[in-house]
Each structure stands twice: as structure tokens, then as C-alpha cells.
Image 1 (tube, rainbow, N blue to C red):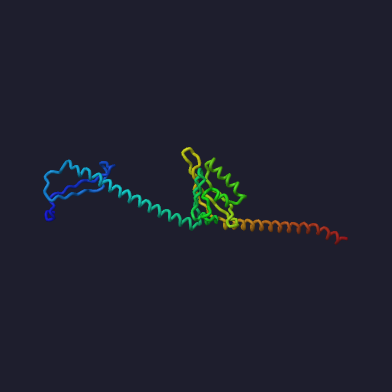
Image 2: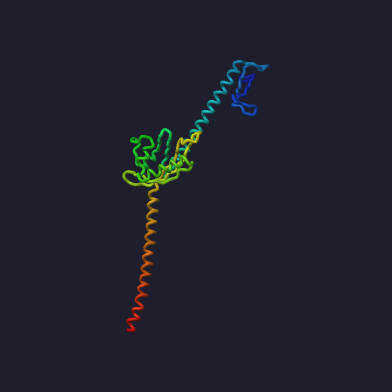
Length: 239
């Protein structure tokens, strides 16, 4: 070090403002001197002022890095969630109950066949799409969720571009400190193919049962007719 004209070195730990005796320092400040020092200064006003400032800068940068890392993780999680929802053709909605504000993601607009440019962004955007015969029932279901603290898990019909579609919905209700409904966030997805398939299966089963009943009645009619005809044959043969 003498070859580099360094004769004395002072090191000071850079401590956090929330530092305790067990905490590791944020860093170490190293000061080089070009002349020998026989005594370490106990009170160096400039250094005492500089160290807290340096600690604040380091903590700020560390906090910024943590924020950026957290945001990056959230973005990654959001992207993964979007991909998962998109693969399942699920739409996400957020209803601010007190202000009646309704937020849809892109999948919801596609699911309901609504142009985002014409949407008002309130609850009426949804009620206008619900089939008139289902609106009263699902409104009662929502009231029941508010009053009885139950999970919203329901199916209903909508009218999308003059076509009836079947929608499944699941949502979580958020309340304020007094227990009043505050927000409801949930998912919607199209189950039309599943419902129609189930209806066809039920109709096919009902048709098979009906045919089986008709076949049974036919057999019973034949047996009864046979029993009736036999005595007549006996009478005719003995006549």
C-alpha cells in the first residue's frame, strides 16, 4: 500500500436507520490516507453527517430494487394468470357495489359480445345482456349472497348477438369493516356446449325410456289379446 502512497486506512460501518446490534451493516466505508495517523478521530463532523446520508441512499436503492422485483413478480404472475384464464376462455370482472362501477377485462367483452367503446362501465352493462327470464332469479341470488354471506356460484343465460348462451359465474364478495358489501370480484365462462350436450343426453335417455315403455305396453297388449283369443278358439273348436 505504501507503494500506492497509502499509509492509513479507516473503516466505518454504514448502518441502517433501523439498525440493531444484531443487524448486518448496509456496507463499509473505507477511507485511505496518504499520511500515517496515530489517532482515530472520535468526532469527525463531516463524516458523522455523511454516513447517515450514505445509508439513506443505499436503503433507497435497495427499496427501489425490492419494489421493482416485486412488481416484476406481480407482472409475471398476472401474465400467467391471463394465459390460464385465456386458455379456459374465462373473463374477469370487478364490481364496485357502492358506486355501481363495473370493470370487465377483454375476455368479458368478448364473452358477452359487447363493444368496449359502447359500454358505460356500470352494472347495467351486465343486466342488459342477461336473458330476461333469468334476470329476476339471479338478482335474488345476489341479494341472498349479500344477506346470508354465502358464495356466489350460479349459472344463467345471456343473449349474445341474438343468440342464447349459457354462462357459469363464480365470485368473491368483499365487505367493509361494518360488514356492508363493498366489492365483488369474479369469473365468467361459457358453458353452452356443455349444457346443450347434457340436454341432448337427457332427451336421448328420455326417448329410450319412452320407447321401452311403449315396447312393454305392446308386449302387455299382445299377451292380453292372446289370453282373450284363446277362449274364443276353444269355443269355436267345440261348437
